[in-house]
Amino acid sequence: MISPQCYVYLYIDEEVNDLTVNFYKTSKWKAKRLKVLRRDEYRCRDCIRYGKTTEATTAHHVNPLESRPELALASWNLISLCTKCHDKMHDRVTGQLTTAGLYWKEKIIPPS
Image 1 (spheres, rainbow, N blue to C red):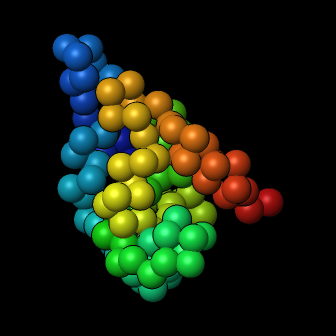
Image 2 (cartoon, rainbow, N blue to C red):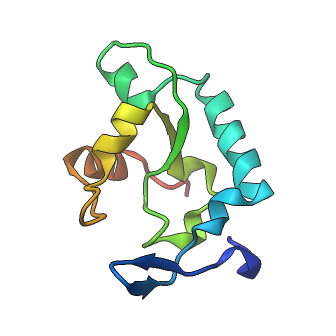
């Protein structure tokens, strides 16, 4: 769960969206990001699906931070991606998940 001090306001199209820009600057996020990248051996999980080996640089929230902030630090909700694949997960105009993003959302199942 995200601690209250991690919440800030993100301005998108001049609207306030209760989210976290500064969250990505916290020591908790930085430590979790490194842990996820190490877990995945710094390899892009989406590229692996296609038999490619690409260095991962991003820990991606499968269930977006905007809609599921309580999962912000849940390891099962994070996958390592290269920049190219991470850019394919979200529509950068609307912020909505793309088909690629929805694939991972359906594939990754929370632990019971």
